[in-house]
Length: 220
Image (cartoon, rainbow, N blue to C red):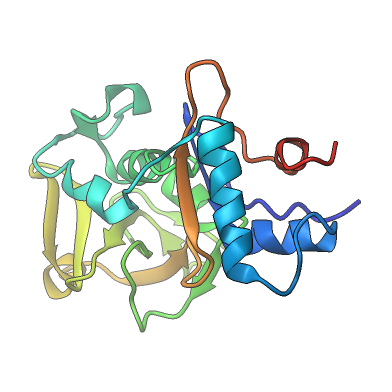
């Protein structure tokens, strides 16, 4: 069985895919040629948007997180309560979900998510998930690495996160790490890949599975 190239799962009526990976898959199956990347990408967008009726969404997780600034904090917040109430991990699940990328509900599961890239502290790029200890901590392999809190990095070297008593805030790295130990970082969206966020038309389901993509591009 071929390894599935599409890294992301649909959330609601939105789905995300990496154009580089889709192009590689369709070239492998000889649906696209290997010698004209620009023409290939134009063809992909034409099929998805003009023929299948998907709508391209211009957004990203950091933009969605900023839209949540000022929302209230609830330690037991449900995703159904977004965007009015969050805890740290439900905020991450919500902002990535708005981009068609499904994250698990809890911070530890977000850290362990596959696919995803566990990376060193530096450099930090927008959209990286930054994990620290917190009031309730979960051990990974030993008592030296624990996950208790998560926030999302921005282009301004700030962190947006949900905090008890303050709600969703944006603050500097220094303030974010005051009283917290760095536990790890996770990059959900590769730096290269051409992320495409799509919203499905009412008569279609949001689906970026390999089977669906092959179907609409002419190979069942």
